[in-house]
Length: 233
Image (cartoon, rainbow, N blue to C red; front, side):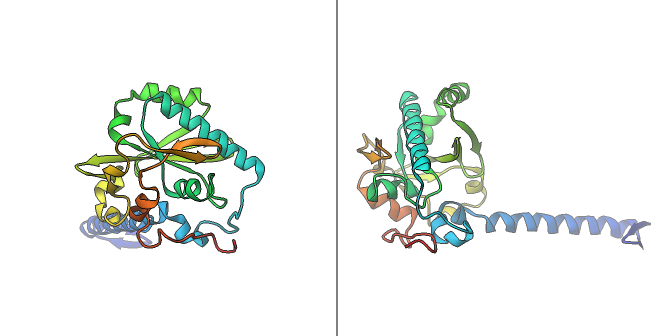
């Protein structure tokens, strides 16, 4: 006999109870993962009220200066490593509309292709970040590098070329591919060959071909809209 909450329960029923509780825990974790899916992670400005109690409507001069420094550090590092990179997500909007980080954006977004990154030794990559005075960690769930510099941050999202199109990597995408079917896939031709550079944070930075075209794949429901956090005019 075993006692659970002061009640005597036969050992056989106790084992069954443990199995049931274990299954409930697995289901709970699964639902939490689905609830915190890529949909919410990368499209934060579709529902900004969920991310900010008091969303920033504009960066102060110091923050903008740090974004400029971070852009330069990341660009120089990736150029030195000979990794093709390009602005994406909110930073692409910022470059095309304002030539800088969106006034209400929370970080810098750059994207790279996996086969080039995979050719870089992990030690060499670590040293490159260190020499640039950048802290980073790899988010294996999302398939991206999260970079921090003083009080600002950036994300380097990794995409994998599969045939004629490009997909996100990361273990979440492997386990829950349905979360990525509508978003995060685009034709490889948009980032193939030499990329055009445009002004972003006082630097000329590579962008995908055809300007807004890639945003149609990242934000198919509202790529043509300028969505600001609630309270920002």
